[in-house]
Image 1 (tube, rainbow, N blue to C red):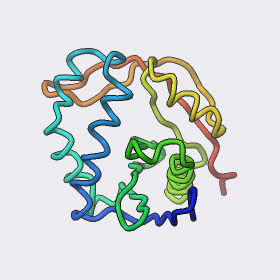
Image 2: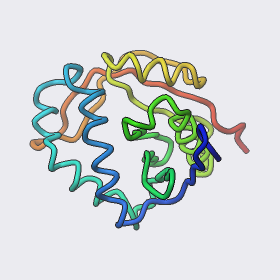
Image 3: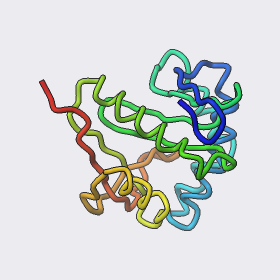
Image 4: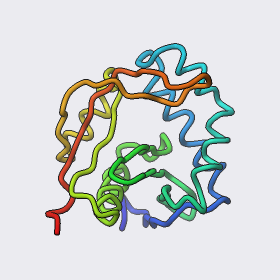
Length: 170
């Protein structure tokens, strides 16, 4: 696979990728969420939390796939069951087509997990992400209260639930 003139390789994330994942995840999360989520979630998503969470999500859990460009991690997706939990790119790779490659891989993984439909949550104010998913064939099923993990329990976050058929089923 390639975006622009560079070859993209997809592979399961390893513990050695945790730092690179966190370095992409934190600024990407800030871009998409600051001003769009409750202050309580911003506090729970302090910078250092992304390094801890990235370390927990790479390797043995098997739910994180990284995209490398030129041997360096350029983006990642996290898929659990039928949910595409995270899709993030390093800022310099935005607009290159890499996000579409990662999203297609996430859809493939959901189908490989035995599900006909994938779903994901997008915070209501993240118009850029919402346009991206819609361009890629995802349908907005409307607003719902997404429950994000906080420091003192779940935090209710207004989000849109997007869905897409990924398999024709058995």
